[in-house]
Amino acid sequence: MQRIFSMLWLLIIYMNGYAQQAQIVPGAVWHDTAGNGLNAHGGGILYYNNTYYWYGEIKQGVTWRVPGSTWENYRVNAGGVSCYSSKDLLHWTYNGVALPAEKTDSTADLHISKVIERPKVIYNKKTGKFVMWMHIDSPDYRYARSGVAVSDRPEGPFRYIGSVRPNGNMARDMTIFQDDDGRAYHFYSSEENETMHVCELTDDYLSHTRNDHRILIKRSREAPAVCRYNNRLYLFTSGCSGWTPNAAAYAVADSIMGQWTEHGNPCKGADADSTYHAQTTYVLAVPGRKNCYIFMADRWNKNNLEDSRYVWLPLIFNTAGIPGITWKDQWKITE
Image (cartoon, rainbow, N blue to C red; front, side):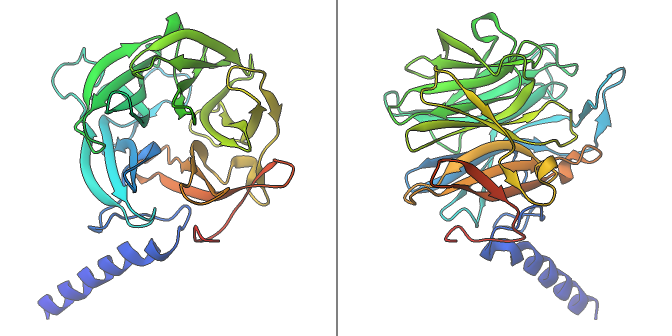
């Protein structure tokens, strides 16, 4: 009887682990192909050699609030960066830890006591290297730097190079945007998160040029995500309210280093004012599908960060180029 019960229990776990695989179910517990929970928060997607690679923060273990913090500074030990791969954006295979945290040297950028957030990976055709940028910080977020790592393979392991303040500027929440011409740009919240910067990277993507532009000045925006649609650039951001969700907003520009015009919340319907209780992390232009975009966000659980969920929704542009995001309980990419 005990054996039968155990087999039934394993079957239930298996079925629950794969129930969502036929469709994207925003806010549900997502599993990899082994049935384990996906752990890739604040992440981004790289498409390479007909495969999607999803990189994200590993949030695992007990959540606590940093003593003496005046804001919602809830933390878990930094776990490094995970990597998953998929052919269809539904079935994700765990490829392991792409960039591990450091467990012994407390002075290292990647020590478990530090902050490793919002990893983004792009491929450099000229060098044949995969380059990862991420937000590196101290527990009190005063370090405010950007870290870079490199690998010969998309799944890693990545070799950490170091961290910088781009052109001397504070750098926290960030994303990397690789344009159609192969140039890459680092968008980052700066100046105590009051103003966002966009900086062009060098040809090898491993450092910053002096081409650094201030945008959304004094607007206090973070969690940037960028895409191109009909030759225009779209930047999606959230407000600065700690782990508490707020309304998203977007800005549009004709060129990355040009003038960015701010607009309102692209989300529509119930819970739009909280971005469906989530925060932007990335916008994926699905390769091979015309005008198919996925708005990726994290539904943070500040009291149990390991249980934070993923909210992926269709991002649809109307004929006037206005983006819209509407909640769906479940959906397919073909829709």
